[in-house]
Length: 409
Image (cartoon, helix red, strand yellow):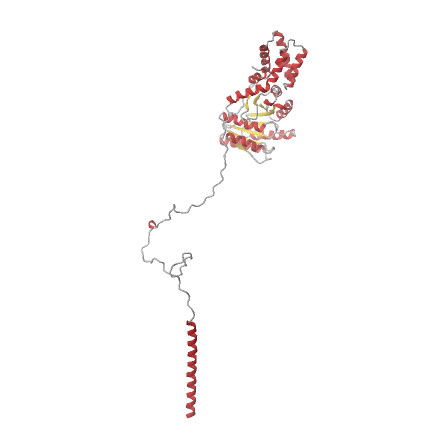
């Protein structure tokens, strides 16, 4: 029994020692954990640069829920005047050309008469000098014929004029300078057919604009003439629409549009190389929609193939007349080309029904007789003449003023 008791004491003692040892070890571990430094306390002043912390689920708002809520009228809206200005990118300013006021027809005519007399009186002076000779023999009359032919009057008109002059000088007997001037003036005026109707028809008999088609060889000043004619019509109070149907020549539409912009006339155009008839059709259509007074159509003037020209101009005419008939077809001729201009006139007369002629560059030639020749060739009147490169250097043709410029007043 004594041995059993000792064994039990030994076991109990061992258990107690084990418990003490384990307790000591646990205290050491806990003590070592408590000695680690704690994280620094948050700063007393808030960091305004740091973003605000997002609220967690269940966090209460700063304002208690049981406080009374404000109505929409009590909420202060942000002050618009205090808002920072927002930079708005400005659109580029497009400069619109200033609208010009064309010179009235009356004032233009006075200036053109003076210019015409300076450029054309060589013919009249030459004839008066020959007619003033003491003896008008056959050689003198031949010189008179040569002078007229050189001025591009034409063979048949020249022969008629010389025959009448010979007869009247023979009957008169006396030939003072004043008598000769009056005689020559009468005969030249008769060759110009003063009874021709030279008014450019721009008034339609229908409820549509007047339609004017301008034709001619490129290089005669056709597009420029169309632009100048627009100025004449605007000066007379007309609302004009331009049709840029010359799609063959590069920049023709740009040139016509520039002329139109200067007087406030809109230009209807299409792509380069496009269908001229389609553009002419659109120009008339838009002119009708706008209530325009006149539609001017500039056409291509290439003569490299007669067949192509006939087809194109014929198509333009047919398409335009789906809206309304043409009121005027003006043929533009360069006065300096002389007899070559007559060849061009014949070709165009075969293609379309020419109703009037525009002679350009008449100030640059002493061959004013082309006026007589082209009228005789086509049987239609010269209605407008150009006497310079100025914007207002286009005016109605006046036979009496033209003859006075030839023989002097």
